[in-house]
Image 1: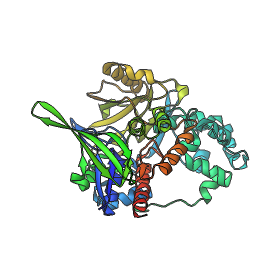
Image 2: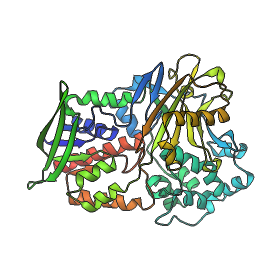
Image 3: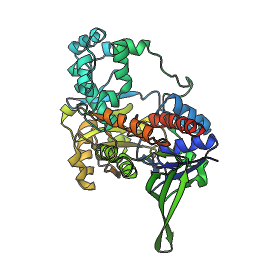
Image 4: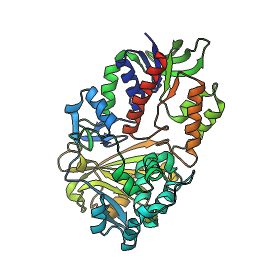
Length: 459
């Protein structure tokens, strides 16, 4: 059997390994830490279900395909259809963001001037220059108010980043292509044909026991093909076109830790690690691309979880949560109302809230102590939601390097990856720093890389 090595046990690596195993290849997945799943982790603490990464998943064709293949249909948990509002802070008050053209017209979220500017979008004839930021793109097409009130807070919610720093071509390629092909976002969205996922599948969902259900099921299917506590120390191409992979495996023997070094030969290899780790792996093969990987910025983000009695919150939590625009000058990026979106996330009589602190907007706040972060978030939520008492449950999770930023000029990194893969045939990249950060993007790319590996080996 042809052998495929996968480095990294996050969602990308797990999905790619699972799909290649189904194709009949002998797969080995190496993971440096003692667990797989990457950032995805769902834990229960004092009756609260805590999500350390995505709180929910968005339906996409390949993600639905994977769930079907894993036979996880019965575990899928749809988001509450009643609590569908998305709030944005405006002048210290929460306002519901209109999610359709009809609601934009009827809703007072945007000014009359902004609404009239939106109507002009199909007639904007300028096209995106080669290196345009997300903020510049939306301002050119939709106006400044849309950037400040909608694009800016949503970029903070998705990337924990700044809209003026991110490349629209790299971070939102579909929007870039809609304008390029149709000359209008509005007309393009109406006329373009996109892959349609199962219409009976919920648009926004999780699983009964959290998002980790997905990675756990993948790991279960891979079983002994996964080698945890194993760090890949070197990869190199050898004369017959195969790939040598050197590893160092940690093994606990009583109170002592032993390291075992092994070299194995594979027919193909997939790198599914963060950019900094990928940089080390390929440094001996391409020092230029390695430097580019080292330059990818991951801002620090702290997730602060509060369990609060429902009766002590004045605001009606009838939505997904709220995001905070930069002009509000707040210390938090936004808050998810977990227990409003899904049932069984909190004990009876309580709400579970997840607030985000830091990101590209306020990276220095990340360095504050746990107590300081608790106080910052409590002070903000007391003012915004009207909390009447201190939360009885508090928990914090820190990500020193959270989400890769597809910043201006990122297309140079993407082109360099393509050049590398052509020059070093048999080595592939599949990670959230390349072609999308969402779980749906990662799964889509895993399918594509799985096919590419299969075609390469067969040829």
